[in-house]
View (cartoon, helix red, strand yellow):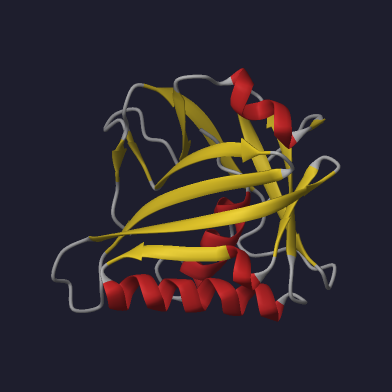
Length: 182
């Protein structure tokens, strides 16, 4: 349902892993509108999936995210398809986070992440994600903003630094979008 926390962390992890190097000539700060209360976003988008880097021509996403609320905890599952260095075909990895809601933000620590998928790929991605959180002070908090017909997630570490690749756009799509490999 919603791309909140994982978008920022997974984007940073993919950059660190060399899977999605940011273009230094492209602004990493998409325009933002009003800040939204994360708790309200899933209910505003029923029966839709969150999608990063949506391509209408192929009806595909770089990542597909589903989220639910459990009290003051946002549980998000982000599915990505990664092509390993061996080039032997895409491997699906799912990263699940349990983020504590703090006002309009969702915050997490390394132990709030788990991963499923092919053991070595999932374990490597999980270790990179946890390492990224540690590198930014031991916790990350994300805020979500309206951005035209979609949303923007901004993730900041406990050390006050923005998590690369910067703000990330996502949108909700009806039906089922395909997952593109990185």
